[in-house]
Every structure is written in C-alpha cells, then in structure tokens.
Amino acid sequence: MTERERVLTLLSGGRPDRVPWFGDLDYWATSLIGRGLKPAAFKESDAYIDWHRDLRVGFYLQGYFPFRTFVENCGITEWREGQARRRRIETPRGTLTETWTWLAESFAEAPTEHLVKSPGDLPAYRWLFENTRYEPAHEFAEMRRRQVGQAGLVLCYLPKSPFMQMVALDSGIAAVAEISADEPDELAGTLAAVRAAHDRAARIALASPAEVLMIPENLSSEVVGPRFYELHMRNYHETWCQAIAAAGKYSCIHLDGTLKGLLRQVASAGFTFVEAMTPAPVGDLEVERWAEWAGAGNRTVFWGGLPGVYFTEHVSDAEFERHTKAVLEVMRSEPRYVLGVADQVPPDGLERRIRRVAELADEFGGY
Image (tube, rainbow, N blue to C red; front, top):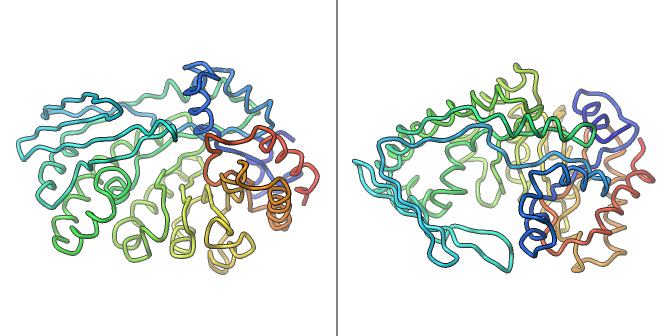
C-alpha cells in the first residue's frame, strides 16, 4: 500500500497493512531554503512532493488557508525595520500596532509587540474583524491535488478559533487572561465579532478541494486549560467538525504541546484526528496512555509520536531507534494511530533519521 492508501484506510475505519508514516517537513525545508540549499520556490514545486517520495514520508501539511483576506474601512501600513516586520492599523475606534521579528538563527519569526495589548484595544480590534471579508482562493489546493498523487493528502486550514487567534497571534495568553479577568463581557463581545468573521472564512475553506481540514490551534494545555476550552473554544470546534464531516471530509486539530489538560476535551469535540501529539519524554504523556487519557469509548485517531528533537544530534541514534520502536509497538496494537513528527523536523534535522523511520515502520509497524 502507499502512504496515502494506508492513511485513508485508517481514517475511514479500516486496517491498512502497517502504521502510516507522515511527517511535517515545512520548517526543515524553510531552513534549507534560507541556507541556500534549496531554491526559493522549493515548497511550491513538484520537487517538494518528490522530496517526500524520496524520503519515504507521507505528505500532508502545507499551512494553506484557501481564502484571500480583505480588510476594508481601515488604514493599514506595513513596513520593515531590519529583522522586524511592522504593521499599523488605523480604525475609527482606535489604532493598533504590532511587530513580528525574524530570528535568523532559528529560521522563524515571533511577535515582539502584540496587536492587542489591553482592553482599550478591543474596540479597534472588533472593528477590524467586522470589516474583514474573504474570497475563495482554491488554486493552490488544486495544484497540490495534481502534485501529491499517492504521496499523501491535500490539507487546508480553517481559521483558528477566535480565542486562539488572540492567544497565539494577536494578544498572547497573559493579556488575554488579564482581559478575561478584568473585562469578561468585553472579551466575549470581541470573540463574537472575530467568530462572525471566521465563520465566513470557514465556509469558504469547507468548499475547498482539500480532503482534510485542520483547525490550526497550536494548543498546549499549560497555556489553555479545560476552563478556557469549554468557555471559548468547544462550540467553534464542534460546529465545524460537524460541518466538515457533513461535507465528506476529515477534520483535525493541531495539539502540539502538553496533552494532559486538554486531550480529553479536544478528543470529545468530534475531530477525526488529533495531530502533532508530542509524547513523553519530551511531552507530558506517554503514547501508551493516550487512549486512556482520551476517555473510555473515544475513537479519535492519534497522529504524532516522534518529537522533533529526535531528528537531531541532540538525541543519540540508539535512543532514536529505541523510541521509534517503542512508539510503533503501541501504534500497531490497533489501527487508530498515525506515526508523525511532533510537531516539525527542526532546522538541524538529519536526513538519515527521516529515512530511517520508513525502514522501522516497514519492519516494526505491521498490525
């Protein structure tokens, strides 16, 4: 069977010949491009999918939102200052500013000034989303569909839940927690405005050519626990999981941090699978306990198991082999697991480790 055949068999409730193996190589590819080892357009090219075929790792994650975003009735200025990418949004209800800074040594950027800093920013933030519209942009997914073939799946993103839009991108958890404590009604009204916008975008994503639709939450339970999840996230997840299933597609969520405080909640929301699950010793929950922790009777598929650091020299070859075999021992016990990277192969990843996973899956991944 191909990796595509394996994973589609498993996701539809069947039993493939062995545990499927899929890996997120996007971050590693970004670093190779940054170092001049791959061409600038590598990730969009046929060669990128061929690279996955050569490495014998299933392709699925391309970080693609299948809609274009248009902000109206606002004055937006964007500029760069050295490694910083800055944006200023002027609205009739106030001005918002943010800064994202590129970290050359890690080939990534992070917010160094958040868009929403205090309750005083919420009126302008609401205006921003009230005046945002979306149009379909399905061309890239159509191209991927032609490129991927039997190498994997075509996956697109819905927007994040409104709460995680603020926590992960626009505010940070500290500011959101303070706003929640001091101005809960203002927060609720703001999240409702973001939700109305995100629902419009999600409907467009639902109509995309994707076979799998992800809500890319980047969750970790030491940041967002059960209380915030039930208050601000469950309804969004359940609504769109139901809609995705009704559209004949598979749904998933990105839960790439600690698991104990959220796995049961997320697994009960209706997702086909929970993706990028990081096990102990890097995470907080052993693979052997994932099913138990999700709750009796739950049949959500678990996707992950190989922490990113295990693809680097920071972990010995012997430990890499031991861990991968131990994970496969659990995953071959029943067809509800996909072996995956948790969450990405990092810039200092080793090609030989990626190649080795397929060999180990062949040898030790049969049911």
